[in-house]
Image (cartoon, rainbow, N blue to C red):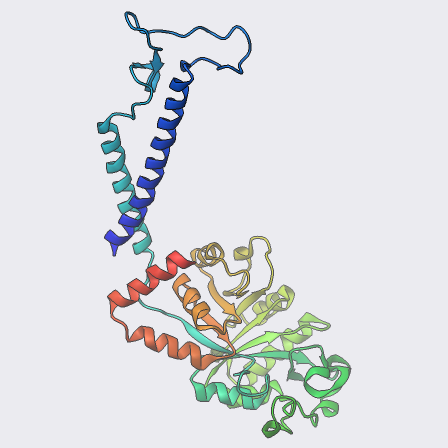
Length: 363
């Protein structure tokens, strides 16, 4: 594999070298055809162009070679020894580059799978049914969205209002839990889920214990401190601090959680390019797949931050992010991601290395 990579890079060096020599030879031949010396300006130059310099005893123009040394024929290519030396250096550089690339490959895919909003491709999102399906499919985490009602209850919902999932044009923050607990948020997905209610966070935490870990995405509508305090209180009451992580795009909420209980792992959600996010006091970065570049992933890993990428649903995209070294794939299709990881575990080291090299060239 190292030889394959080295040959690829060496081929590029040789191609560039051959093209450069060809252009040099054509240029020198054209000047000789026009009867020009190396310092002449040619027929379109300004009057008073310097005369041709000639080699003593000969009639041809004097060419100036490398380092100012004269050479008889400007159309002659550089000396063969120089080409050989260049190719040797190119080969050494190619091997060094190949070795550097190969040394960066980890032949163990230490990647976890998070079911996005529960397993939202097979059940209505942010419901007990979705989290139950995530457990059945073998996901490591279920990511769920958490909001506060008007009376301070933590419930599961992605949007601010209830229109998309329940047909009600009212915001969760303006309603009490008693006003929303009887709403149907499953019928829009499929008839068999009709009657599925909006669950309390405490109900999901109770169900998940011993079955699956949770990633709580805090959606802050009003006071970030109130949201953080309510979530931390629920996790402490249910002794679920070690089985849950908290992520949010609201850095104030995350900072308050860190103050309330430093043992809770927190992650900052990134959906667009920002500044130096690795300086934030969080344990991981939850990055949109649109901006999860190799550079960002490498920088975050070097800074000791885990990288979770969302929402990755296509197998080819999953493989690319696995090979880039992410720690967690957030997907609505956890079964697909798990099957891909199991397939890679069954590969020999040579097969996996070939797959990673191929992914490196295609990225």
